[in-house]
Image 1 (tube, one colour):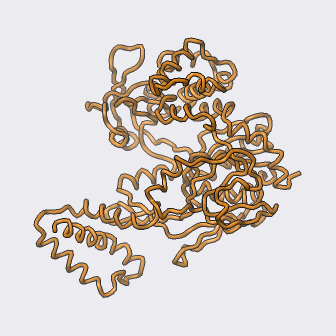
Image 2: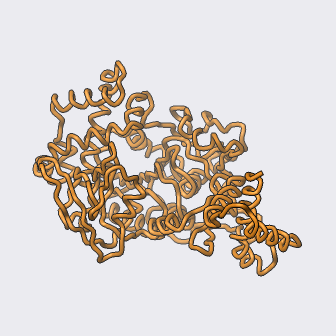
Image 3: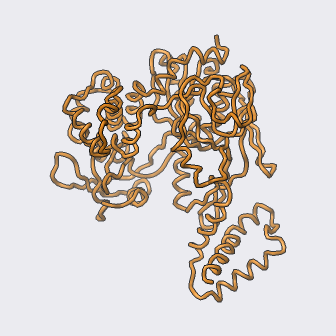
Length: 531
């Protein structure tokens, strides 16, 4: 009987909690119709008579999450902290101390120190372990707890206690917090004399301007063809993806359109301006974690035969969310429309079985090889569309690449090591001992990539540690093939010194997706009729 009362209260609280929001949207008309007074009456009776005190706030959150769970997987509830964190990330700036960290065995290991940021100015180094924040232990805290402790208003200070390799003591460092830029493009460089490469990790408020600045800088370095890396980009603002697509599409070509139940959700987005990159051969990299705005950009390029898409089948998120703030500062992110690529493709995956919606991505087994005519598509039972070059592409299952390439194809043990955090741990252990000397020996990442090599003792140490992380036979033979392990650790070490720019510069030399994409520019030119 108690459970029935609680369930009733849960449903009523959600109605009352969001009533004001919908009342504003609907111009004062009740979403409950004639039942409005009955719902409020029942709520008041439960408040007055129910046997136990029940927190309205806790039940409101459970109720909202419960109702949203009956919708699509991307309609979600956000707490006030989550709203603030998302706003900071999308605006491209937050206030803090400028570090990236990873929790290994209950201890906070500082992986990246933002160059020129507050922590770097105070003397914090990659490889340092954060033991205390102010006077409180930082051991065994989770990620959210640590972030709350070290974040704060610009100009305020926080004292951290650091453990550093080579020192026996735990020593304090006072860091004055500042404004930290959150970049959407974390790496950009020339892969060779004519090929410019850059990644986009999110689509925030400033992403299109960042990309335009990067394109201009690479053009000055001799860029004649472009590689855009959208792997692991889960999306962001649709408008920003549209602006970036406009950099490469000519005339007034359609980029994306949206359809919803209400007329305000129906929009069309097309190219508007001319840019000097519209005739450059183009290759776009995606993987199974590329979603939403990433798929809008990749889909527009593919639908118009403007360039080639290389990598893995993308996530398959074709829904548009609007964030609606509630009275206490929390919010619901509600799906209000579906988006469609220029050919009319909806790339949203089926989500009827929500329990398998995310696990399907991890367990997916994609094909490998040339898919220029999309004969390998697993979505062949879905609607087919013809590009200007009369190539078939399919809707309903994400963006399928024109060339299937996976970084971990035939490297199952390497993938297991990645899942078990081996590469981060192994590189951190090595860097603690050798990092200072390495920074002295190499003036930049170009010299590091060209001349640095691990010695035999280093390699043996990595194998021994790998067998500790995954105690299986045969690990040495599989990872030694192609030198994947040492190359990945080398890239992780470059990240300690030169941040993400260093990581991607080193990894590009052995990354199977980048290497394959680099060989496809002639085909990309042919598809786009640039030659």
